[in-house]
Image (cartoon, rainbow, N blue to C red; front, side):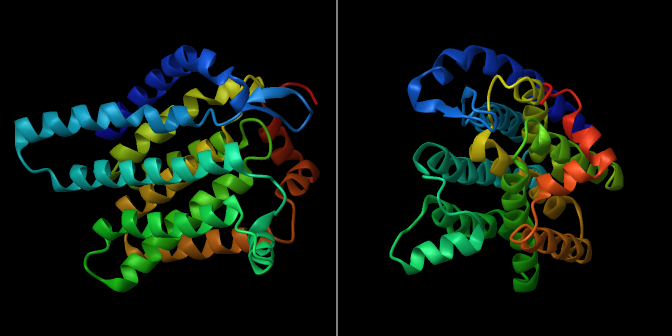
Length: 280
């Protein structure tokens, strides 16, 4: 029940906040060209960072007054804040200061060997540390659990970034993945925090599809990390290990294969990917 409520709160609040923040996103610092050369505001994923914070504060205060300590929800709220603040800040850095030159993990490493510290490498290294911090409260004092949980969160965040190559793609995949997780865990209480983020991401689906904004790394990383956190917060280590392996395979494959090319060649995937988007 709490998961459903927080999802709806995120959905409604994000739609309203996006409307209010449009003058801010119209400022030149946010303007970037999309895949077809149209100038749009980037980093609109800031909405996904800003929306959950007041609701988490309000709900935490309410739970504390009503019931005293609520360990599961306390962990869900706290780790959600870590994920959205950490990955949101790193994504914003890449959106506004990244040069877009180095692509993929290998590209960032090669640039580092030349003495160039790219924003992408800062994001990858910083994301790993943030993932450890977010996974730690769920690790049951076992190092192996911490490692697996951190891998799930970090790899999911990076996959979100990799999927953000077409309007609405990362929101669709994140919503589908979270829906499967919610059904499989019967709406586990640990999903309350991540549901706020995914709800906010769902609200941004239509503006993204209609090319009125781009989530940027700010939003894509946060969405991916939130779904990864949901896996860590609601499943056992065995399931997390399977998810981590799947995410690792997808991240490695992305170094050699274009997800967009695969989607374009596969009719059902192409249909789902372009559903609701402007004609190309």
